[in-house]
Length: 134
Ligand code: FE
Image (cartoon, rainbow, N blue to C red; front, side):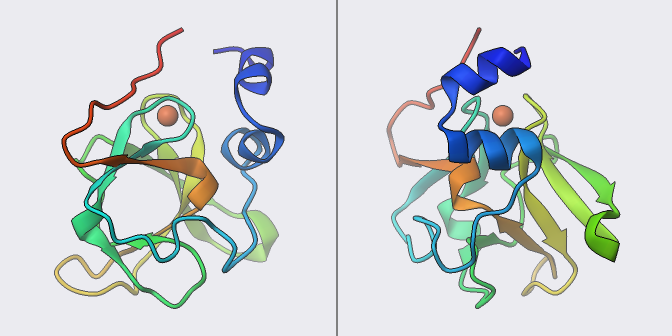
């Protein structure tokens, strides 16, 4: 989708985080305490990203997951912005920015996928995944 297309489709905050690699403020995301069973999908394109069972309370201020729903759900890219070396996580389907992955998560993976609430949507268990096509 073109940049203009994303601008039309997404809210200004979604556009800033998903398409301009922004970060929502900590402790303000709508999915911080969510425990309902289901699937978290990309807020831009609907690509399934994380299962509710992999979500945990990290204390970091953003929704956190121990692993993605599948190996090819996201892509990981080295991010050297702000004088840090971090691993950025993007949606493999639409290349939108989701958050970062850190090597300080709980077992079994030891990973913490630190994801912006604005980058994901929750689809309750049993409901269809709303994949966006152009
Ligand atoms: Fe996507």
